[in-house]
Each structure stands twice: as structure tokens, then as C-alpha cells.
Length: 382
Image: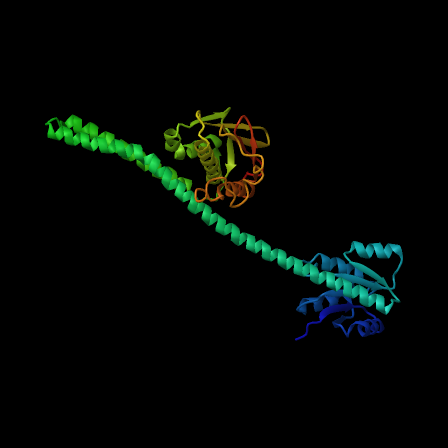
């Protein structure tokens, strides 16, 4: 197996090729082309080339043209080019570098200098390739980790959803149970008239319909819909609030929504709802964990000609200064072990920045945490 680096010499003078090849052939695999056109054709056939030594004055395509063509081709632009030429005036040298050369050696050259320069540039080229490979590996690793995080986040979110479905269904189920008991009482006491039965049936159907609507709300929330639609911000926020409504009521949390006007956006509605849900759910937990008496969450939406800003603020005491810069990190959580995944806010930031082309940040304000979502109107256009 040949482990030598490959050098392509493009020069129309056979004596020049012979001299250069004799200097380099011991350490490198030498390939030769006698003009620019043949050099490009040879490049297309070779498996790899680590360096090109290029003359300038040649028939047909000159060295500058060859270099420009190679640097404009995605398949060859990465290959380092050294001009090896008799043209040594400053104007020619500058033009050579502007065409994409990494070095410029004038003829006649010093053999040791040529060897050292070639060796150094090949080492740099290999280091760059290795670095690019490592970066690509890290990117792939990060993508795999993010995929795992997304799956974990979905599972964690599903757990939250099941809990909230239970909250949403508890009241209508209790009411439905009372309706059924009432029918039995009417029957046992001989009071089950057609009118009483109709009223009980209508009330029961209304409760069942409410439970069915709850399922639709949750099903819509989890739609994997990546199509941008025109929607009202208030609708997205209100649907997120609805999912948590019973939890808020049972814990005495007041939610105030302030939108000055009908504000619409072309974008991914479900993605925004998931972000708002995560922030609201975290605010709920913070208010409960910190034993706040008058629990409240204030949501305000404003817009200008360029962006829409959503403020979601609570009065749970705020985020400690020593961790406020960490709360969007993956797996970081302030909850007790086993109570939180540390994925929700990380995923929320990813969704806002990658899918909604916006920003998500947090500040402490008025004895609470205030999450700020900024959405660029233009970037979210279809």
C-alpha cells in the first residue's frame, strides 16, 4: 500500500518537470501534466491529490486560469496550490495569491527550500483534513445526542401531558359520576321522569363532549406538523394555557394574558405552543416549590414592524444569579433528583432558535423570572 502523499506537477517544460520530480520523488508520489487542460483532466481521474505545483506561463490555459478554475470547483478547491514559476515580479506574485495559491516559489529554486515548503504545506493540508474530519464526527455525535434528547424530551412531555389529561378529566368525570348517581336516586324514589332523564342525558353528553375536546387539544398539541401556517399568537398561547388550566386552578395560580391587538405570525404554530407550554409548566412548578402565596403568571405580547415579543413572567422569586446562565444547558435542572429531566428549556431554546428563527432568553424581574421570546416576522415568512 502506498502511503506517500500525491503531488501533481503541471508544467509545459519537460526539463522543469524532471528537476522538480527528482527533488520530490523520494518522499512523494509524483503525477505529471504538461498543460493546464490535461492537468484538470488528470485531477478528475486521480483518487487523491495532496498538493499541486503549478507553472504560470503555459500554452492554452495559463497557471492563473487553471488556479481560478480549480478554486471555483467544489471538488478541487480544497487542494493547496503552489505556483512554481520564473515570473517573480511583485505584480505576478500578488496575482498568484489572489487566484488562490497558498505559496509562490520563483525559478530557479533552491532544492532544500522547495522540499521544506512542500513538506510544510502538505502537513498543514493533512492537519486541516484531520480537523475537518474530527469536526464532522463531533457534528454527527452532536446530532445523535440531540436526537436522543428530543426523544427524551418527548417522553418527559408525554408524562406531563398524561398528568394534565388526568387534571382536565377529573372534574368532568366526577360530575359524570354524580349524574349517574342522580339517575339511580330518581329511579329508586320513583322520580325518574322523561324530563329528568333528558336533562341528565344532556348534561352527561355535555361532560363527555368536554372530555373529547380535551383529547383533541392534546392530540393537536403533539401533531408533527412542520408546515408554516398563518395563526394568531393569542390562539397559540391560549391553547397552551388550556392544557394546564386544571393544574393552574387546583394550585391557585392566576394567569393573566395581555395582548394589545390581534397579532398574527406565519410560522410553526405547534412548535411555539410546545415552547410556551414548557415555560408555563416550569413557572407552575417554581411557584409551587417556592410556596408562593399569591401565585401568578403574566403573559404580555407586543410587536413592532420587525418582530413579535412574548414575555412570560412569574412571581416565584426568580432564577438564582449563579445558575441563570445555565438553565438552557442540556440536562441542567433545579428540581429534585427524579423530578425533572433538564431537557425542557434546552429543547425550547433549540425550537425557538432553529425552527422559529428567534431568540429565547430569561431575566429576573419584579421578584420573578421573565422569559422573553422574540420572533422575527420576516424570517418566519413562507
